Image 1 (tube, one colour):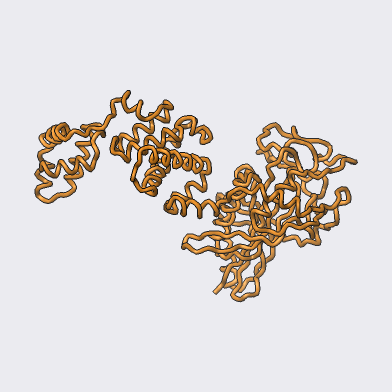
Image 2: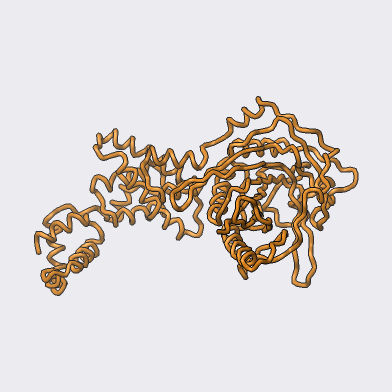
Amino acid sequence: MLKPTIGLEIHFESKTLSKMFCSCPNDPEEKKPNTNVCPVCLAHPGALPVINKEAIEKIILAGLALNCEIKNYSKFDRKSYFYPDLPKGYQISQFDFPICKNGYLDISLSDGNKKRIRINRIHMEEDTGRLNHDKKGSSLVDFNRSGVPLMELVTEPDINSAEEAKKFAQELQLILRYADISNADMEKGQMRCEVNISLSETEKLGTKVEIKNLNSFRAVEKSIEYETKRQKGLIEKGTPIKQETRGWHDDKQITMEQRSKEDAFEYRYFPEPDLPPLNISEEEIEKIRLRLVELPEQKRKRFKNEYDLDDKSIEFYIKEPQLANYFEKIVSELECWKKDKNCKKDHFDSVKVCSNYIVTDLQAIIKNDPFSDLSEIEKKITAENFAELISMIEKGEISSNIAKTLLLEMYKNQGDPSHILQEKGLTQINDDSEIEKIISEVLSQNSKAVEDYKNGKSNSFSFLIGQIMAKSKGKIDPQLASDILKKII
C-alpha cells in the first residue's frame, strides 16, 4: 500500500519593532508602498547589516516553546538566488549552524490519539519584498517587507496525512501567538507553509515533490489530499514521479508544476562576511526561558483538571485566550460569592453553567455586534456582574430565558443584573397561585393541545410549556411550570 511521507517547511515573521538587519519599522499594517525602507534593506552599495537582538531573542523563545536545543554557537550565511523582490540578489539566512535544533511538537488527532512530530531545525533569516501584479501584466515591487525578521521551521518527515499536517500548522500558530513571537496571520502572509511529500510502499522514501507558498490551513490540507491522489495515480500507471516544485491553484483545487526543485548547492551558501557569529550563553537562554507563558497544551490540561470542562469548550477557550482569561476571572468571582453566601452548590456545576453562557449566549451576542472587541468585553460586562448573573440562575431567581435577556442588556448598557432586572420588570414569578392562573389561561386557549396530550401525544405537553413561557415572558421557571401543569392536567 502506498504511504505518504510528509515534511513541512513553515516560515513565520517575527513580531519585532524593527527589521532584521536595520532600524526600519517592522510594520505589517503599513499600506503605502516603499515607506519603511532604507539603504540596508534596499541593498544599496556599502550599506552594512546589524543583527536585531530582539529577533534573536524571539527565535530562542520559539525554540524553547517547541522543545528545541538552543545552540550556543550560530552564524549567518548568504543564500544566493535572483528574484525581483530580493534586492541584494541573495538572502541572509542560516545554513549549517541554525539557532534551534532537534525539537518536537505533540498534536492531537480527531481519533483521540496524539502524535509527536519532530522538528529538525528553526533558523533565522530575512523576508523578501512583495510583488504586486496588475491586470496589464506588469509587476510592481513593494520593499516594506524586505528585511523583516523571518523564521523558518523544518520538520522531520514524520507526517503521514493531510490532517496531521493541518493540525501541526494550527498548533504552531497558537504557540507563536501565545508566546507573542509572531502574529502568524496567514491571510497577511505572516505565516506561510510549504509541503514536501512523497509516496512509497516501503520504508525507503519516494521522490519528493514540494508544494510552495500555502497561505491557509485549508490549502495545506487540500493540496496534500490532491497531491497524494496525483502521485498515486502516476505510480500505479508506472509513470516516474518528477522531483519538482509545484504551486497550489486554490480556485481549481489542484497543484501545478512551477519549476524543477533546487538543491542546496545551487544556492551557493557561504558565511555572511558582514555579520559576526552568534555566541549565545546558557545564562542568556535561561533568562529568555523565564519569558515563556502557559502554552496551549498546558492550558488544555489545566482547564480539564481545574474546571472539568468538555473538550469542545476547552478548545474554544484555547482559540480565544481573551475569553479564557475572562472566564477564569468570573470563576474567581463566583468562588467569592459562594463563600459569602455559604452556597453548597457543586463547584464544577457552577463553572459549567458559567462556561455554557460564555460559549453559547455571550459568543452569539459578540458575533452579532459588528463593533465588538474582545479586549473590551470586561468593560461591557464586568466579571463580578457576570458572576452575579450566574448566582441568580443558581438560586432560581431567574429562568434561563430571563438570563439570556439580562445578558444582552448587560452587554448593551454595562449595568449590573439586579438593577436591570428591576428596571425591565423581569423579576421571576414564584407564586404558585399566579402561575396556576397563567397556566389556566393557556389551557383554555389551547383546548385541542390539552386533548391531544391526554390522548398520548407527548409533543403537545412541550407545546403547552412553550405557550406558558411565552405568556409569562419567560418569568416562570420551566421546571416549576412543568410540575404545576402536570398537576392541573
